[in-house]
Image 1: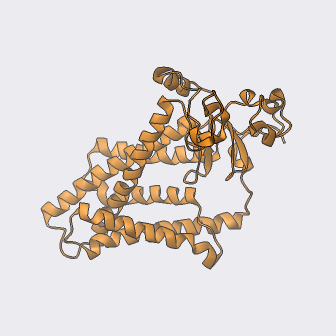
Image 2: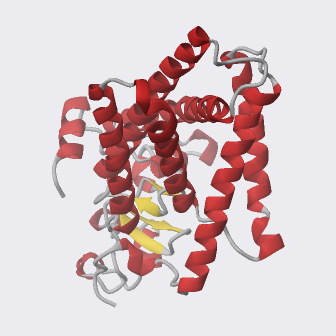
Image 3: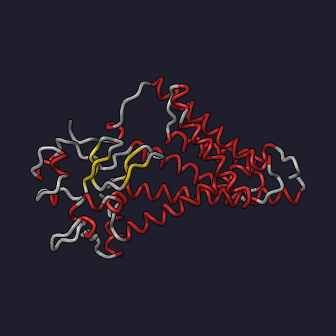
Length: 314
């Protein structure tokens, strides 16, 4: 097998029917989770939005846990990338059909452009090559390694294979491997790390924009007296989608900050978690026990150089 042209080639091939049923299951789980979250303002109309947030979080987690057992009951696995896709479409649909009427032209153009770019970015990162190194690649031959197992073992050859790690999910060897992202259905490596950061930032910006638009819509409904003890379904959907967006923002902002930190100090998530597996991160010196091994980052060139290296095309 030659150097892989795209990440899709290393995934397990599935029949069209399996993809179709997985898509239907993912769409069903999206609708179920969104409707479940929308029931929170319906059942607890007297609570503030902040008070509804933890309840919505618990409800959403329960639905997701139930969704994980769907495969056992109906024999179909939910696709995480399709679940992300359908949630984008759902939020976009709520905006277009409910919120859009009272939104300024500029904000309307911004949020539509953001949603379209998220869909395009999701397709690109799902179908793109993260930096896969094939077993027969000249990259291994130049290092003098017979196979990848030999390449990742501590030896004098390791320096010839900088930051090539094995992803157990994809069963692939990825250059610049950071982590496997189930939500995007691909590894994050040297070739798509910048796209991943742009997409993660795009999600934070788009969900923040949606939260602003939905807050303005809810305020208009309150002022006009449209929100009563029993809210219309459309209002509940807006509030539920806003709660969902805020829940996503809570972890996505932390995740984004973490990855910015990793870029600034030129370290990958996998390396930070499993640094004891990689000899280059272990301080050389007198023989020490495993508990006394100290961490050192040989790839850290200073924040400015690290950021510049990250932004350079590869």
